[in-house]
Each structure stands twice: as C-alpha cells, then as structure tokens.
Length: 134
Image (cartoon, rainbow, N blue to C red):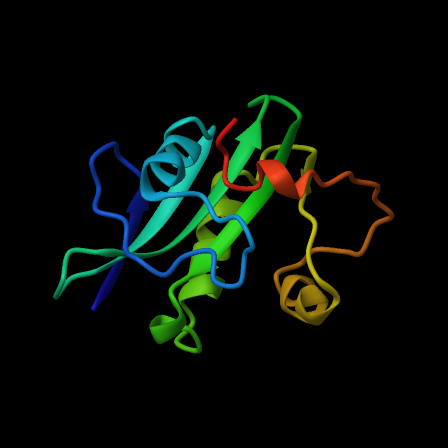
C-alpha cells in the first residue's frame, strides 16, 4: 500500500530519482529542496518505508505557487502515484490564484487531465547548476 503525506525532515528518500538528468541533485540536496519548499508531499511504500514519489511547490502562500518537481521512482510508475501526488498538492493549493508549472510536451495531456491549461512561458536553464551544488 502507498500512503501520501507532507514531507518531514529525516524521511528516507529512495535512490533513482531524477532519472536521465545530466547533473542530478544528491540525496542531501534533494532533502534540502523538499525542506525549503512551501509544500512538499511524498508517496511512501508502506512495505519498505521508503519515499517513492514526491511533488513540491514554491509559493508566497497568498497569491501564487510554482510546482517545480513531480517525480516517481521508475519501478512505481504507471500505478497512479504521480496523479495522486498532483491531486493532493493541487487540493492544498486550491485557494491560490495561480498555480504554474513547466513540463515537457509529452506531459501536457497529463496536466490537462489535472485541470491545468497551457500557457506561454519563458525560462532560462543553467544546467551546470542542476545538481543544486554551487
């Protein structure tokens, strides 16, 4: 069984997140990302006690939130874990005016199914800083 709850410092993060990233964050940096988020929700496998998925939001808590990361370990994908994480974070953020995220083209239909709409966006990526280390 998989349970969903807010991230708390000290939760055991699984190996295998950030698959395909050229400079992925290490576990310590991953934990800091979740700790410093306005909201982070995790999926935990009851059998192992391991975090197997997460979603986080950066927010002013009044008007806007940005969802930078939604990740599910590869061996748990296709089971609705990512959908449930998104449902929970969108519910928590429901009173805000804007909730934005950026995604790859192949994920547009997933987010449309979650009630989101395509928007124009601009961004800049510094892949050298992708690991979260300076």
